[in-house]
Length: 232
Length: 279
Ligand SMILES: Nc1ncnc2c1ncn2[C@@H]1O[C@H](COP(=O)(O)OP(=O)(O)OP(=O)(O)O)[C@@H](O)[C@H]1O
Ligand SMILES: [Mg+2]
Image 1 (cartoon, protein in one colour):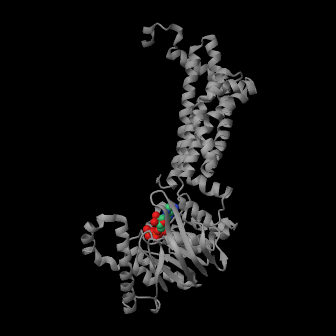
Image 2: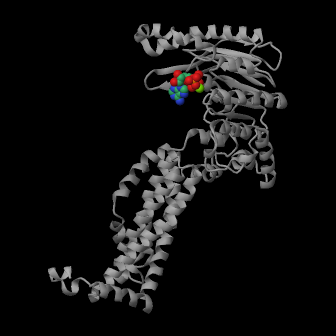
């Protein structure tokens, strides 16, 4: 038993203990509840940040003035780990769901807006010209009929990175906040020294992250890229 | 139909300072006329076409289409680009129907009209394909169908066949001639291929460069369809080629500066024979 060498004792769980924690967590329920609660927060934040980020990116790509003023700010904000906003979030919203959703959204929005900006700025002018000539106008119809699909390869990258960022920010936020969730469960387990459950949750987090990327985003990307003939 | 009066265009170019791309260009194209623009690279052909299309602003001079000043792009003047410009995320059918959709036409109706045009360019079998599944010539046909479905009064074509091989080009030329004969659209056609210009057009406009101006006009008075065997066509092709040779020299000199002397022999060597086909 390798881990015994360090004489960690209870500080590191054995495979059997971890397995037992999985079993208990799923049969007795707390793990399911935590997963559902965390995913709910994640999906809400994710949806907001994708919509917000794409729109911001569009505005940056479209209006030079915005890009030169706030564009720089977004780059700066992108470098701030979203957990750094937590104190603010707690002061503004309290130690609750809203605070967690807030920092999760912040964690994903900036990346998404940068990806969307790059994607829209790289659209071939010939497509924009063709669309305008055929009467797509310059507003919303142009945006969703031409800009979004044309920028899709970049947007997809943004979405995947945003998902990963959101996931990180979420767990970080939940560690502090009250309520039900994977992060809270991690923290509770630490309080009682239940290392088996801690490891089990870490594994659950990794699995959900990987599976969602692989099953949702990668599939979606592959399917749509096939349409593009993998040209980009 | 298209009225261009004293149009000039200046670009602010980083390297060259203020660059006079077009200088006092005037041109009138009648309804139903097929006019070609030829001229050395950089003489402002695309610039002029883009101004007519409404992609570029007209700052000096005036461009009127059907008696109305050009303010922006519109479905009455559809451009066929050199690089087709099809949307890769839409099927051939949806690409062709795109313009009709913008007009608010119902799905069934617009698909019907689009299919009709797709059939006219012999691509019925590919209506459900995506652009990347088509050859270059097929893509260009889709682009033509997409333009025609809008039923524009004017077709603006910027080197539409330049990226195609000889055979495909030939087929598309005769397709275009047939379409023009059938629909009587007004067509402004840019090409580097003099034979193509002479074969298709009623009138060939030769432009000169630095700054871009109209140098000469040639009326093609041969009977339709034009044939290469026609001595009139052949004669005209020679004349236009000669006219352009001077211009070409100017460009090469401009681009290569003093190095030109060294390259000159090379240039007037074997390659001068192929001048009959293009510049
Ligand atoms: N947006 C721009 N900014 C600066 N200069 C430009 C711009 N667009 C065109 N020009 C310049 O204007 C001149 C005319 O360009 P244009 O594209 O109209 O030439 P062209 O006759 O179509 O050439 P080609 O046969 O190679 O297509 C060129 O010297 C080009 O460098
Ligand atoms: Mg050009």
